[in-house]
Length: 114
Image (cartoon, rainbow, N blue to C red):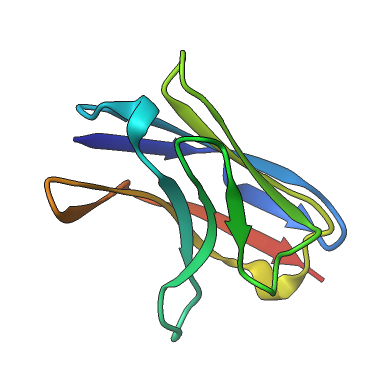
């Protein structure tokens, strides 16, 4: 299983970024896909989840600002992040479960300046 995330960068507060994650080595269409993030000195937290049926769920801190989506044909999952604020600064990780274990992408840094 390989998860390759991209799209991070430096953005000013109020700006937007879109993260992308390509998955291989799994039956993508039947897997829930997740985005997590980890800020310096903090625990890794679940940000957004999208099920195989495209049902979504979000952390309270990002509801109304972030949107997760998927393209099964391209084996891609996306995280559209709007109205970013400095508290969103973190390394963002793509994640899924397969064979009863977690798999993680390398992570992509998102930095929001005030």
